[in-house]
Structure formats: C-alpha cells, structure tokens
Image (cartoon, rainbow, N blue to C red; front, side, top):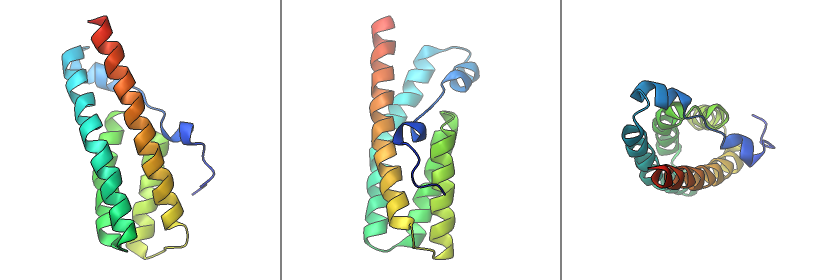
Length: 126
C-alpha cells in the first residue's frame, strides 16, 4: 500500500449512488449521513485502541465493518487502505500497520468533517 497517499484522496466520496438508491430522497440521504457522522469517530477510536493494545483481531474486525459504510459513500481509496489494514492485521504483518492505522484514523476524522459540512448544505437547501 502506498502510505504516501494524500489524505484528501482518502476522503473523496460520491453521494450519487446513495441518491440513486434513495430515489433522490434527501431525508433518507440525510439519515444515512447522520449515521456516518455518529459511527465514524467511534470506529476510528476503536481502531486506534486496538492498535495501541496490539489487538490485531479487533483491528481487522473494525476495519472490515467500516468498509460497508464507506462503500455506500463510494470512498474507494479509504476502502483500499482499510482492506490493506485488515490483511496486514490478519497476517500479523505489523511493519507498516501502525502508520496505516494512523493515516486511516486521520482520514476518517476528515471525512466526518466533510460529511458534517454536506449535512449543513442539505439543511440550508431545505
């Protein structure tokens, strides 16, 4: 995994698929985005805690669970990083794991902020 990925690239998302899935129902999209805002900081904290406690099973589990959230948002680069973290954790390859987890947690924090801004735009448009 290229750990020099720009953090902005990791937080790119696309709501088009979610809008299509919802039939352009903004209230549904808003509900999903609110869930993402709630789930994301907890996920980052659990991943960091698992890394700090050297609990690679928990780390792999959290990375795996969060990917479905990111797939809804079409966050391909961050999903790729989480796939890499999951594989590293499952294989016990800790050489770059800490750096990758740190990068993923930063990206999750920034993504959460971007989603909050998106929610503000939706509320102003309503």
